[in-house]
Structure formats: C-alpha cells, structure tokens
Image (cartoon, rainbow, N blue to C red; front, side, top):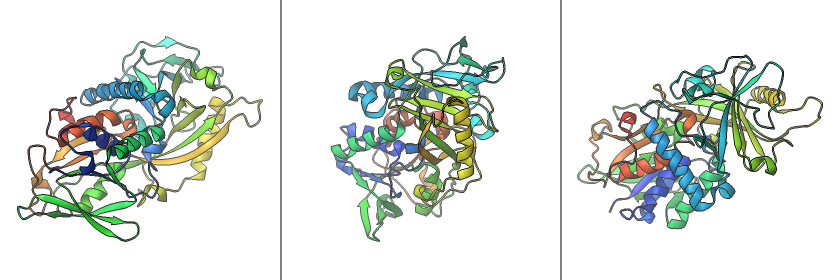
Length: 413
C-alpha cells in the first residue's frame, strides 16, 4: 500500500492532499500532512494578496495557469466560495502617474517582483480601455487608470480562508495532519526503497510513519527540508525567498454595496521606490503590498519573522495617498500588518517534478508505477495562490503516476 507524506501544509500541500484524497486509488487515511510552524498558514498561504489570473503567464506556465483558474471557479461554484473564502470576479487595472500606460510587453513571472516594476506588465497584449477605476481609489490630477484584464480572466480570493477550507475538507475525509511537527529523517527497506519517515513533534516525541511517496511543498523552506532528509543528495533545489510586507485596511468607500459589482486589482507604477499592488476583497478588506526585499533572511519558522516597522510605515503612506481622503481623519482602518516569504526560482517559474532517484544520494530508490517517489512543488513566486489548485491537481496525478491535466513538462527539474 502506498503511503503519502506531504511536507508543508500550506496552500500547495493542502491542495495536493485535497485532490489526492478524491482519488479512488488512494485512501485518505494514508495521506499525511506535516507542518512545522506552530501557526498554520503563517507565511504566503495566509498573507498573500489572493489575486487570480488565467493568462498572465509565460508559455511554460500558461497551461498550469489556465487549469488552475478553471479549478478555482469550479471549486467556488461547488462550495459557495464567495461566502466561504471571498471568491469574486475582479477587474485588473493599471494606475499610472504618466499619460502612457504600463504594459504591452510580457515579462517572466517574477521580474516585476524582483525589480520593482509593475505586475501589470505581465498582463500581456490585452486591449487597454479607459476606466474610472474603483470607488476606493483616490483619483488625483495627472494620474490615469487603464483596464488591463479581459472579462472573466481575473478573480480574487482570501487565501487564508481558502487554505483553511482545503485543510478542513482534507481532515474531514481522513487525511492526517501532524502539527506542529517536522520530518527529520527518512528510512529505507531491505531493497533500499523509501519506506518511512520520522517525525519530531513539538513535545520532543519521535514517531515513524510509513512513506512510499514523499512530496516536499514547504514554500521557501523547501530546500532546507530536502537537504535535511537527503544530506548526501547531488541536487540542490533552486528555490530562494523573497520577503514581502503587506497591509490589510478597511475603507468606507469599499462596502457590501460595492462588492456586488466585483473586486478590483490595481497595479501602480513606481511610487515611493516600489510599485504598489492593491486588491479589494469580499468582506470589506483592501490588501496593500508590493514592497519586497530579497535581503531579509529566511527564519527558521514562519512565525519567527519580524515585521520591519519602517517598511510598514512606507506602505501606510502609500495606502493613505492612494486610498485615503486628505480631508478625512482616520479614513483608513489598518486591520493587519504582515510579512511573508515567497518562494522564487532563478528562471521565474515553479518546479513541479519528480526527483530522480539517482539524485537522492545514499543509493536511495523509490517504487515506480505511481506507488512511490520523491517529488517537489515549490517556487511559485507571486502566483502561488493563483496556481495552487492547478498545482494540487497536477501533483496528485503525478504522485499516482497518471497523465497530468495540464502540460507541466516545462516545469520539471
């Protein structure tokens, strides 16, 4: 019998467990989610913006993007996602300080993130149209707002509530959650096949559980987890971290009445040294981000991250300028300050792949035919939430040795 261990219970791990537990080939009780953080969804899965797009991606990522966007809508239609995790259609807009619009040249998935340009450039060659913009956006002289998304091609969710929904569905079906706990080692059987993993719980208890299929989906912590389990491996996973601060605010100009018309995603050109991103979400919240730093070291655990007060102050200044009314005192209510670590790769696209046995070191072998293997799903950069369901679907199929629902050959190691 195949037993699956998923290292990382963020949105990628939970999505994979969700789709794998739907399969008649896998018993839900044989799926184990392992999460080291004492608080669930304490990094990008809980603190990302939740913007979804269907076609803002390079050719190698495009099939995954389209599949995932379709799955987001199907899941929301089936489980009342608007109420449960704020799923809503959205409109993508570019806010420019100049007369010229941002866009027209498709960049790779993380160029904007690393270099301070606007993600609006990833929209590609859509037809721009003049627009008034959302009601919560402060309109100043000399600025222009352009619609950069086609109808039904972008949407919005609250990633924290979506992640929690997926986890609840998994555990209800019988998927086992080990939290907080770490996978500290792997063991082989007499044939040198991967046979089990050892868990270390927060109380110091060590437990061995059977494991023939191992998926590492720990976000920016994926290389650390892989290096711990396979210290003699010849492979170094090319995933690093990019820290991002964010704010969640409330505005009197974003109410339930406005929500009926749909959410908005605003991508601003350079402002105060970075390009802000602002997403309105169902539930009266507006998410403000775009301030990124590759120099912040990755902490041991997501809950060890320390918010930089100066960086948050910069975000508040931008929020006040773009969302606030100068004549109104306390116009914006800050609901939450956040810091998360996005997993990024040098080539700007995620890695969805089985790791060849020869690269595991120490003569490790794994079963074939969908019964075993070591896999990785990480490096989604700014598109982790958007690509989460597609990644989960594809990785569940890959774990079982089945043809995948999207062509992800270009995302292999």
